Length: 142
Image 1 (tube, rainbow, N blue to C red):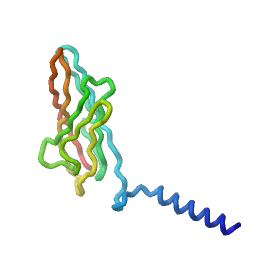
Image 2 (cartoon, helix red, strand yellow):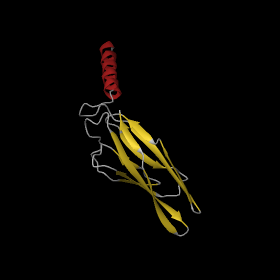
Image 3 (cartoon, rainbow, N blue to C red):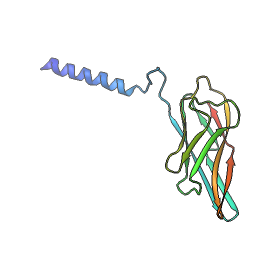
Image 4 (cartoon, rainbow, N blue to C red):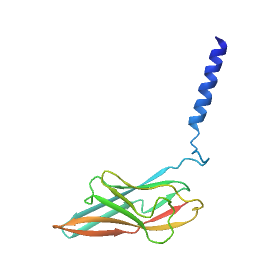
């Protein structure tokens, strides 16, 4: 009976340690996902926009998710780099909708200390027409 309890306790400890370790199969620490909230309001001939945070600081290996504010007037969002270099391996255009954020994952190695400019493109309905709005924030890799 005592051996069974010791064996069970050992299995629980080993299993707990295994799941407590947030490492990926390649040995790197699992990435966090940083969220950028994007809002745009189109009223008459006025367009108000906001991006929070404007300058996103993330760690090496992190992912980014660009979400449209629930009250945003645009239903689509597109993220594109403004220079040839881009820290993510999963492409250079990231598209999303109100119900599915744009996501950039799989960061390239050795991006620490670099700054990346990118454009957020939104479509703003204006009196039966659609205006394209481009916003230019930054990503900084710590």
